[in-house]
Length: 497
Ligand code: ARG
Picture 1 (cartoon, rainbow, N blue to C red):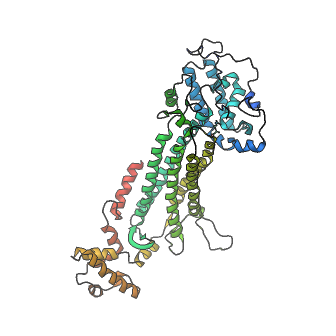
Picture 2: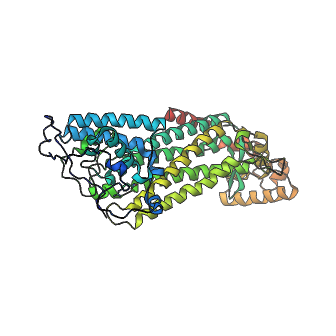
Picture 3: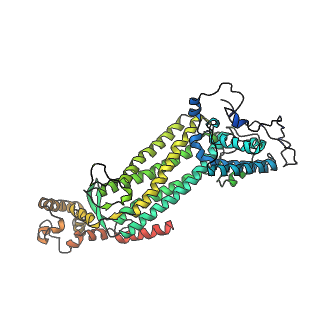
């Protein structure tokens, strides 16, 4: 393939007594008044091509429609590159100033919506560069010295993703805060905890919500970890092998606030593992959202009736007037499939690629962008929706009373009175069988009836069989006792700030 990097060596001393290396790199281009070649050519790269592309192929190969969202990162990266070129004596002060001025104007144009994006110019990088040259002339053409779109795009995606990770981290904190608030409010509310979706033991609703806080806290931790590897600089790798200009890559990294430079040029331009690991972290966050969604949907069904979601997050049915559907959690559960799909797409995109850059990598953007958009929207919506959650403690309590949720407590009671656990388990199974045949709760059996199962049972058993007794008893660190829930709320509060 053609040298898309086109580091054509146009490094002019432009007449002034410039920085130290201007002479070394002095190249006086043939006088050319048309600074605007790039913008005017039907193909953006070189004179080598004689056949024009069909519109279909142009559309197929172009990425500008979606990668234009990288524009700010592209300009930031270019300015850092230009600053370094100047500091290294490769770019004159005048050219540097012209590039800065041109980029400021381009920024204003894009922000104002007046920038004209051209499909003929393929991608965001060539669009910005062409406009720069249109605006400032030959200095614009010098910007690409010592650089290729290969290291440029890798840099842009990393810069952009770093910003998005920061935003996602803030959103994860906001969501956790809402859950912590609700957990504190509902520390004493009891619902049945399930295993196999069968009633297992009573738990505090606050405790249940804090389980999700743990998940989202780990999601945030994962993102912070991924960020370290995202935040490294490919620029300076040029097309694939490095460059013959005396670039100061560390300087560019510092200017861009990056934590280091990619240490191998072939790897720098080609691997998208940072995008894949981000996508994996995002998928997990969505999986957590999806589990929560599943619970909200169940809890809101008439068969549970544990909660209501605010109307603003539900829709009605066009045919059944009584319906209020939990559309938002259902969609979030559905969108999780889409985000996990992007992860699979990105991994698959990478697996067959030889070193170094291949155009396949242009396909990294849409899945990555959609992953970020979907996760951001979902986190925002969930924070708002959960802040407006209506909790129905009576329904939760009734459900906890229905399923012999305190059977384990009775067994533990007998163990404390000297019965081996296995025997206690058996005794309680008989008691549950009797109670369920009669359609009543264990606590509704009389003391005499209970004593018939084991003579060790005394009047204090009724405290043990109560939901509150069961809850309070589970006060190991991380357990469901309200005292533990409140301790966890305090820990999260100080962690989240
Ligand atoms: N639009 C391209 C991408 O997203 C930029 C890099 C193009 N490099 C090249 N040698 N064609 O990957």
